[in-house]
Length: 185
Image (cartoon, rainbow, N blue to C red):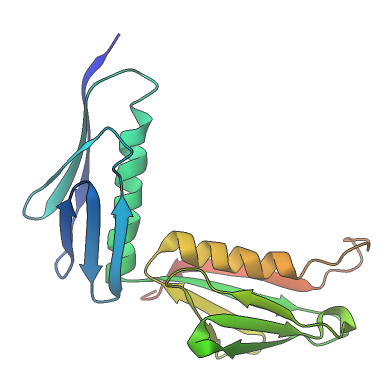
């Protein structure tokens, strides 16, 4: 059985501009500009004054969740371009102090002295994500307008600092995501 119409509404706040051309959405706001390509999705996107409608006509039951997924991706871009996303990463250590350095204007993070090792761990930020040292000790702030690139950059930092060939119940050193949210919070 086919569902005649599946529809989701995404509110567009003031100060945010959404344009669509050939199923490529461009969202621009005070924090930056991001694009989303939905040409592979069989959807129709209609932009009105203060809202955006994602519609799917005559779909089967398995095809309807794509509408909510697309609406959530667009909503995350709108939030990111107006407020910006912020992930806080903390370096936790017991004996050897972990030092974090920022290079290339926030595009590269270097982690030194993890478990006393001499080799440095170099992590490049993805997309438009930028890393900054926090005001508190051992904190790193990763921010940007795209939630996917910010969260993936934070995950890459956490994955680089995992103790290998050791008991993880004893060796608790590493870098961990402490909080997630928007920059304005």
